[in-house]
Image (cartoon, rainbow, N blue to C red; front, side, top):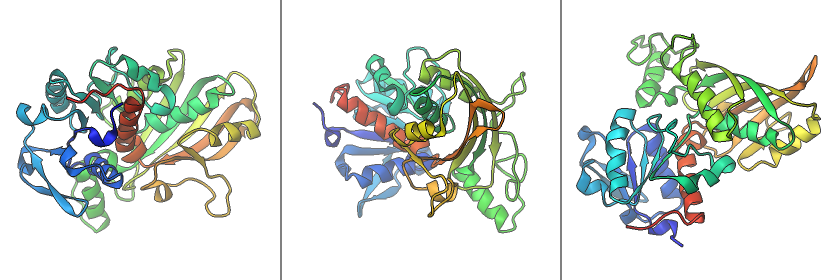
Length: 338
């Protein structure tokens, strides 16, 4: 069986918010420097990036360089991904893509390993990572599906600016320092929130909200699942939060709900603890888990569960999920070295 340390990993989008976190994760596990290739935009080609007290040079994303990697972790625009992913796959490599380019293609697995790693068995070279708001929500749903059937979720998201990228993080920082320029968002984000993430569609929902609706059904293999989202951008650097009202097919006790969530891999409950009474982005930043709290039943409906969650959108929402997918593929003997 292939070992992780044997795999030539390429990070495409290495200077972006997710790419930076992906490299940190490889550094954390001491992945060999000679088994890492970094790619970014043309203006970054040739630059040196620090790695384990050494440096790695950013390469041009051409076929000669891309064909040398076994697995490409891609976090770039859909257009760029659609151009580069086939080059890697056609040369015998595997792509784990963080963007939306391939998510809803029937032949592409959309994977959260805790839920549907078996879908990896049917990959044809490309695996997609869900949207960073979808992942924590479907993990909570899947945990509850162990004790009941989730039929409907009304969800409001509170999304950090890092989900938009580095430029948005800088814009928030500058605005908090008194600069009123708006280059990324249509409205000032400092000291403000707006219920507008991605473009609006004809039905009044945004593209981001449609991602949550459609991706959840695909990951959970449940076309009947009803998701009603409102996605909101908030002036937080890192860490997405969500408020969920979950309708189930039967009454389940708070004790059973807590037990199912706390026993679920990747979820940690923070609910009225002495250290921290509830999840917050300030606490979830830099951590692997999805933190869940404020767990309660609706006052007049025993089949409704309400909860609040927070997670690091750059880790479990993106880079960490990619690495976990790779680890699952190794475990399932799906990686062949070129």
